[in-house]
Image 1 (cartoon, one colour):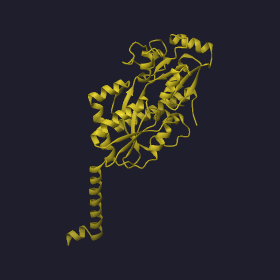
Image 2 (cartoon, rainbow, N blue to C red):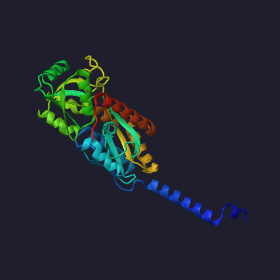
Image 3 (cartoon, rainbow, N blue to C red):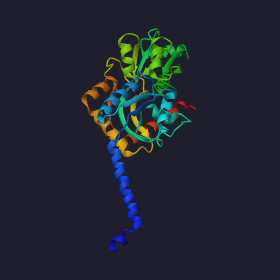
Image 4 (cartoon, rainbow, N blue to C red):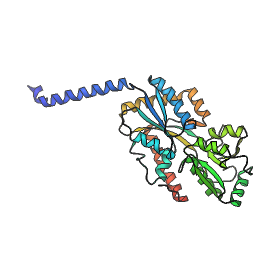
Length: 329
């Protein structure tokens, strides 16, 4: 009688349903993933983000015993691929691996088709890169940053630099360089770093500010002339190339990073499973070496710390946008 008083029929039914739901959720978590996972990389195949996605996708997929399919969705400075993920079902089978453009878009775009902080589960800072490298085509008659700035001032607007899109970190690197040196350069946006670099190698544009991993092979081969790096320290890939700070150019430091996300409301038991394997992969010596070959260093920040990192980066670029009067629609 006392038991019936404490647990009337309606309440007993509710408790049973709750227990069944918990058991079902646990069973789903245990069987997850039951099919291939899609990893959207909002950049073209062949570039550093694509290489990073395939590297992690292979290792994490092996650990989860399911294939992780890299889905390249380039365009609009990564916004096309990012929106696809933001609008995907939160079922644990779609993830996003992108660059610092996720922060620059939030800071610079007035009509972003998603909310950077509300429409995604912020998972981890995968890796950070060294500062951008300034490389010019051999046809440009400048052997140093000083000569390049003098040439740009003598021919205002005639020298061009390519980037992976409006508001991309490669673009912002060029804008920072212009502000710091007074060089008058014209920006040419592309759908990714790879096509921009191809046009630079073909002599269709004059220079780029890009990641060390993109610039090292053509510089080493003599197809480009490296002039400087935009980090606080030299990249291990190009240790002979000075930083802008070493050359007396201040306030132009800019690097890059890779972050992992899922659609908002993706069950935590799913994202935790994937995140655990990603963090484990980032500790593996062979993965560390391969990420190093991509000009980056593995990080693996906890989700809450990465969210604070992302918010701080957005704030930094908003301040930069106000400083150089840069906004996009």
